[in-house]
Length: 107
Ligand SMILES: [Zn+2]
Image (cartoon, rainbow, N blue to C red; front, side, top):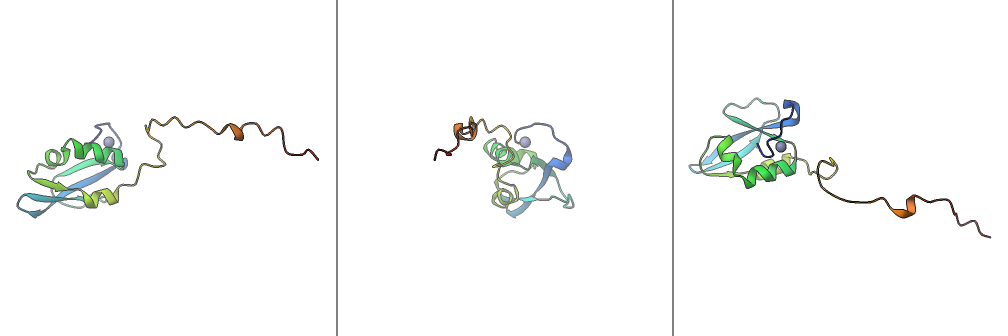
């Protein structure tokens, strides 16, 4: 779900839908895979979560109709700050950190 990339199950987070109202569900993270019901799998990644949400993939993957609240899920997925996967950043190293040849030893 989400980005639709393949990944080993250990890298995926299982999600199940918990019904909170006739047309409203809560997406609940199930890292231990112990909850009954139909589960969906998502990368532990905010980007993947956002993609899945944008595509409305939760309803489809979990076979529910109605609103799926992912508030709880968003907290279970770590921010993709330091994983460094495809952020597309072009951060260059500091020019200062390269040439430490000329010190300030002029005295
Ligand atoms: Zn993904």
